[in-house]
Image (tube, rainbow, N blue to C red; front, side, top):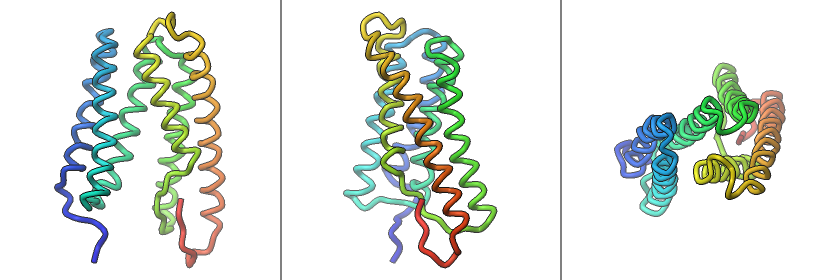
Length: 190
């Protein structure tokens, strides 16, 4: 019996809503509506937590959801960093680091697919830390876009996000290079 259920499920619907919230979020940023953008970002975060909870506890995991969920996360986070950099709210170099890491991950998956390596995606601890600090960076920046109230926290998150994101990208390169050199008969997990 498969570990997945039908593709039409509550978690997948919540994930699709999160995908649809990404352009709304960017539009609100463009219009300098930071409080509303923060609410949309929070709603997307809540839907992310809910879809995972429902998928696990109501046994509504789907193959589609295993791809859509991380794609929705990447779309929202990448959109946020690009929009905030373009608007001058965060430094462009931070956006470059965040987007470069995501491109490295996507290129790695493409290479694995092209080489027909069988793999299972399991986020690493550093990857989870990266997502958490990126979310905190966005939250604090939207809450205090001119960096008056939380200037010290903003500065720490800025450098922390850059460092953890860079380490995560290097970690994925290391894992990918080792994985590509392993014989195909091993049970491989990323």
